[in-house]
Every structure is written in structure tokens, then in C-alpha cells.
Length: 471
Image (tube, rainbow, N blue to C red; front, side, top):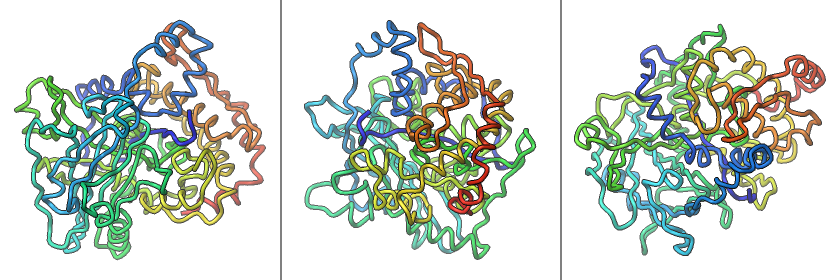
């Protein structure tokens, strides 16, 4: 992949009130996250795997390459006054950045964009979530978006996720929407690729202050079936090469391609509509990794679907910031989303971090090798949970047969994409078995003897690495 193409998506931890995910929802998610969705979920991981597939299954790789590729570069037009109730209820509009590359359609899961809003109420320190709608430019939604009831003096922030490669934020002509809403798409000439945010630092500052003062109650992490504390999105057992990207938002798509918010009312009114989602870190963590081991995410009230409790990237990151114990995974310099022309860039890395409630990096050159070593140490968690993960469905059946095989191939791809073998001179201690016809990973073996020896070989750096990723 090119250096400025994106890479990934994810999931969440446990609250006692969160019911287990039903089989119907898992089936729907698996259907969404199938062949096409896998390529959008982890584009760089998918690219690495396609290299292996080309060697192991040339016929399958050739057939995949022959398929028409949707335009991976789209633009999202942000509504005016987007941090107000009216602005949130005004649909964002998707359009091709360069029409010569083909159209961009929200109903095409390789091009879908998703928006999540978090609302902090300063009067009672409560957090709620709203899911602004995205539609194709020039079209109308399948159902009018719900106008949220915002508390007085609410602090509103937005996070955007994308299933293609590069999503550029734009505004209506003669308006200063992006500046007014404190929107960040990356550096000039080098966007974050799949993700962006608006007013996130203000939201996190208020929420963190409320938590420290005891006004915001952050759910404690429960105990997983493996006897360990449930992970957060900053556990090194959860992250990949580009952690903290993409949202939990889902939309409904009708047979004619129009889009609606995914609410109980819309689902009942739009019979036959299908669900699309942003299959990234948060959705992987919340819908697959966590429930596989008996955990669940922190959920808060939905403003577009009153009465429902929903997970979100905002509270995932907030809980991780406040509760994850050392080592705490934070965006490394070799995360493809924070590179510029394939090279680490401290300014871009810190611009990304501030939108995800992460402390600033103070050294751009020593961040990825320690990140690799911590990923290696955390691989013991995958060994511990292998049976639980093997017995849980895969987020992407066209990529791997279950949660364990999916996580194993994701880890191997991340190890390669972060250039860990070169940085710390250790090869991945995982062997993957891939179906020769389909390219699906059907089995994975973690060489525990090699893993233990590898971990022993880096024992001398443990204290220094933990100092870098201390809580």
C-alpha cells in the first residue's frame, strides 16, 4: 500500500448491564464484515495478506484483482453549525474527492463513512451518544434524522470513520464550519486517511476532569472468563498497527440505497433494510474480542434511539485513558495514519493523539520498537484465550474462520506493517494455515516455546518500555 493509505478498525470492555450479543446480531455483523468489508476494515493488513494469498492461491488472488475496485477516496461535507442539535440532525454528505475515480456511495460498504457524536452534560457530568447520518450528496435520507435534545451548555464532539482509504472533510461554500467546530483531518497535505474528529479535546478535558473529581462514574473493568481483568482498547493484547480508529456507528440501508439512522423505529418502518457498520478497532473489540472472553463495553444513552444504551469510541477511549494499567498502548510513530510520505512525523502523531485522549509523545524516534516489544509480551494473552476465541465467530469470515484465527492473522500483519522484525530482530512466533482456494486463514499455531524465549530475550528492556507506556 502507499504510505498515506489508511489501515484499520476495532471493539470494547465489560459492564454488568450489557446483555450478551444475540446470534442474529452476530450473524448480521459477520455478513457485513465479509469479503468486501474485510478489505476496508484493515486495508494495510489486507494488503499484507493479499501478498501471501498471491503466492498460496494465485487463482483466487487473480480473481480478486480482476474485480472492479470502488473509488477509495471520498469527501465528507460537514453540515453548518454541526455541534448544535440542528447541525447534528442535518445529514453529512458523501461525494467523490475526484469524480474521475468514480462515484462514492454510502450504501457501498467499501466507501461508507460513519459519524459518532459524544455529548457531555456539564450540569450532571453525564455522557450520551448521537449518531449523525451520512447520505450521498444530492439525495434524501430514508427517514428523517432524529433531532437530539441537547442539555444546556453541552460540550459536543465528533469522530468520523471511513471504510475506504482516504476521507477528506469539507464544508459548504462561504462557511467556516470546520474551523468553528474545531475539526481536525490531519496535517495540510497529509490527512489521517480514514479518520478525523471535531472538538474532541474539549470533550475529553471536561470528561476527564469530571471523572477525577468523582462526578463522572466510569465503570470498573470486570473479570473475564480467563480470570484476568477485562482489557480496554489500550491493552497491548487488543491493539494493532493503527489503534484508536473508527467508530461504533451503524446505519440502515434500504433496497434502493437510501440511508437511515439505525433505530428501533426505523428498523420497524424500513422492513428489509440491511445494516452497515464501520468495522474497525471498536467494533472488533466490542462485538467480538470482548464477548468472546466474557467482557462487555461501557455503554451510555443514545440520543437518536431513546431508551437504548450504546457503546462508542469516545467512552472506549475515555475508559482506557482512566483505567488501563501499565503498559498503556498509545499511537506509535509507525502507525500509517500518522506518517507523512511513509515517514514518522511527531506533529501529526501528536495531533492524532490529542483527538483520542492520549498524552503527547515527546520523542518520535523511540516509540515503535518498544510498541513492538509490548505487543510481543501481550501475545501470551492470545495463547491464554485461544479456546474462548476459537469458539467465537469471526468478524470477517472471508478472512479467517473464527475470532482466534482472525486475531492471529491480524497480529502477524501488524507485526510486519510496523516493521517489528527489523526493529527488534524477532520474527513473528505465529504460523498461519491458509486455504489455497479462498485465502481464508483456517488455523494458527503460536509457538509458545519460541514466544517464551523471545520474551526472555527482551526482558532487559521491560522497565524502560513500561516507562514509555506508563499509566
